[in-house]
Image 1 (tube, rainbow, N blue to C red):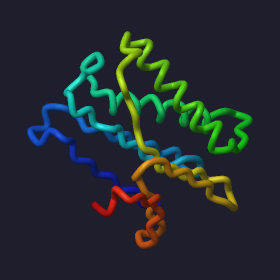
Image 2: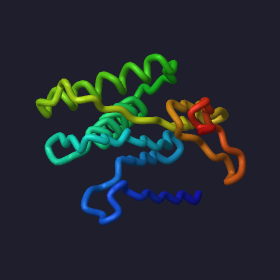
Image 3: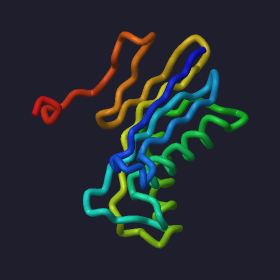
Length: 141
């Protein structure tokens, strides 16, 4: 298995980390969470709201995939778990009213099947060639 990852933060001077969070749980879960950059420069305890959202969503999926009696869940349940985790993270940081969001590109390895979840404009590349991605009109502009 070869896994490569690279990210470039919005701040070219590298003064702030990027909003991307990578999760790799071999033979279980592979995911990238790309936090939505806050254009107003809002920070939550030294972290961008997008990074907080990506981190909290990633934590929710790690908890979900790490359960001893893990059962595949429908997309609606996964989304609800990520949203609760993001809301909890904002609340714990005292930033409940801050807008925070993230995209998700997630592959869950279920042995003989792969379960995919794509939310937002992130995508999944299979075997380095086939790209699975949700397209929307704004992508054409």
